[in-house]
Length: 73
Image (cartoon, rainbow, N blue to C red; front, side, top):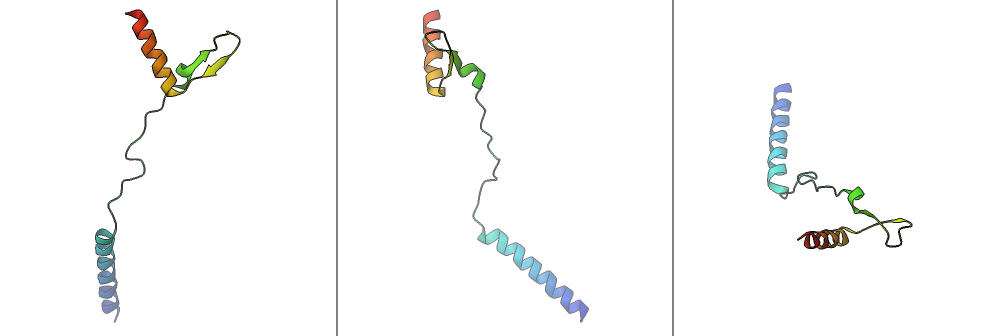
C-alpha cells in the first residue's frame, strides 16, 4: 500500500513539474537588468543668482554638459 502511495506521489510531482514548464509564460527575472544610477551630486548646480543650489533633471544636465563641451572647442 505504501509503495502505491509513493508511486502516486512521484507521478503527481512529475506532472506538476511538467505543468509548471508548459503553462508558465517566459518571464524575466525581476533583477535581470539593473539600471545604472545617476550621480545626483553631479546634477546639483548653483543657481544663476548664486544664492542657492538647484537639482537639474537628467535632460537639462546633458544639455549643460554638451554646451560646456562646445565652449571648450
